[in-house]
Image (cartoon, rainbow, N blue to C red; front, side, top):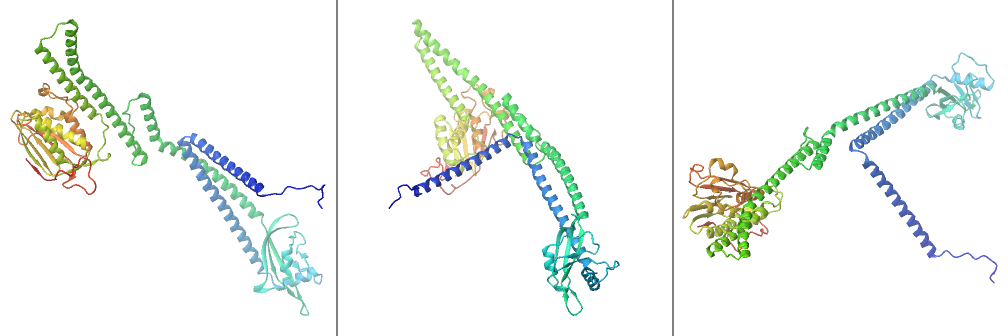
Length: 536
């Protein structure tokens, strides 16, 4: 039968256990999140401290820990050394105690003999637990361990002994040495007993207190000195960083790069300072070149735009007034407008080419470019632009790492420059040998005073200002060759005098190899073109 009145407890099934585990898991996850939040908060608080403050704080904490550890270790080492010396003194003090003295002391304590005050006798502990101090005064409290040694009946080299720290009945802390030393009584009986010697620890404790005070004072001095020294070192070491910060803030405030800082030494901070100076100088030069480019571009664009606008205004006015222009005049104006549009297109393309982001040699991924094929394609265009000119060509295979489009544009500009300044029926010599491409014309040459400026943007010599061109072609050449890690120069031909009318020679030197490197070639390397010397 079932008792209807009994309380029925619900069974603890698997579902209840799963709920408990889920609750525990949520609690652990909450604890982990709280600990992670505490660590992040501590990190944020530390991040708000200045770099100098963090350096000083970390240095002081590290030195403080080292000082505390060393001081504590020194104190414990001194305590052990002093205690060992006391223990050794106690052991040695038992040696002079003679069997006769112990026998007399045993008789004295048992009441069978009179005490002889001339004997230097230590305290005796008997197996029944009572002790007999010779002075009847400052008795050391006997422990069960002392009684066990007294009852051991061992003697000589095998005698039981122990060293402990104890107290007298008056409360004085002492170091105690107990050794078993039984006494033979008349009739052959052995009286079990132990000898107990002690030495006050007050001098040792006082010495340890003095040592602790000295170490604490020394630690305070060292930590204070460390804090001051760390602050001075941090201020001195971080001076370049402060200068760097001030320079960056000044640039951000004035928007004017070019600020530099003084470099001290050859360490990492000095390298950082030097890198900042180089970056700041490069930014200043870039800003200067950008401003100059904008100013020069505006000047160069103004002339064709003004002429184009004038011609358009004339055509519109003639249309509005109904006064038609003579056909020859209208034809000339339309031709001039077409030429001006071509000039504008060329100028804009050149500006776009020069406005590309420039890269230092070796910092941009480059293609494997067959320079001899690039020169051959550029020559095909040059022949179309100078149909009456004679080209002498000698192109040996040479492969370079460069941007294919930029390199072809540079070679085309170099040949166009030679075509433009060559007289009708003149000759142009193009040679590529061992990575050196030379283009020699027989035009008027370049005056000596103009040679330093030939690769400047928008620069045109006074004698060439009546000729078409924007003054950007050679600047594009120089930029492309520098990015490829090469060199370019323009000067009088060998044996000729600058500006004497015997032509000029342009020279490009590019690092490379006469054979294409293993692996896939760049997009400019055409496998359908044989890499054979071009002799034309």
